[in-house]
Each structure stands twice: as C-alpha cells, then as structure tokens.
Image (cartoon, rainbow, N blue to C red; front, side, top):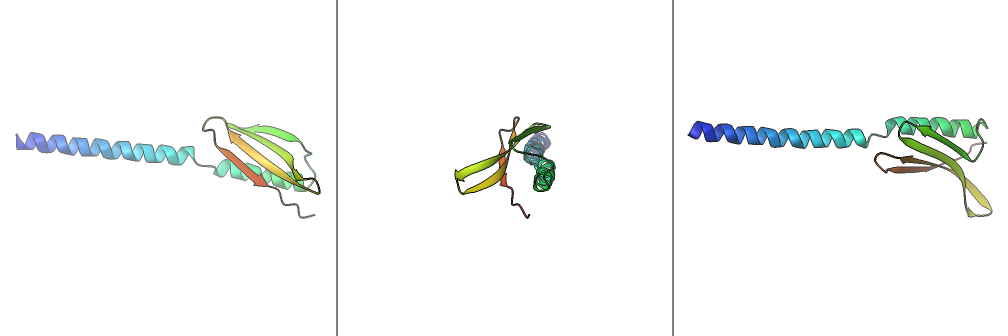
Length: 100
C-alpha cells in the first residue's frame, strides 16, 4: 500500500512539473519577437535610405506592419513603425530616427 501511494505521488508531481514546463516554454515561444525586430530594423534602413515612402503597409507572417508620420506636433513629424500580431494581439511601436 505504501508503495502504491508513493508511486501515485511521484506520478502526480511529474505531471505537474511537465505541465508547468510546457506552459513556460509555450509562453516563451509566443512572446519571441526576434524575427519581427529584425524585419523592423530592415524597414527602418529602407526608409532612411529612401527606398520606401510613407504611408507604408505590409504583412510579415502573423504581423501587420504600418509605417506612418506621427503628427502630434505640426512642427515636428516623427515617422513611426507599428507592428500588430493578429494571433497574440501584441503591438510593437518604434520611432524611426533619421540620420541624414
């Protein structure tokens, strides 16, 4: 009887540990933005070197990307890149700093 109880406890502990690890790894994979960050850097380079013009829209896997002028102050316009993930509803917004 003691062996049966110990075996059940060990199985339950291993099940809980595997569910926790599975949840942890799936969250890490879902929140990985390395590929979109690289693509945004490429778009910044293309914009700074006048290869694309505004407004600009494109898709990159589940990401919908838009480049636009942020006209908060009429004297200063700051181009912005906004990427929206249609699967995870995550939004990334980055300004483009021109070095011309």
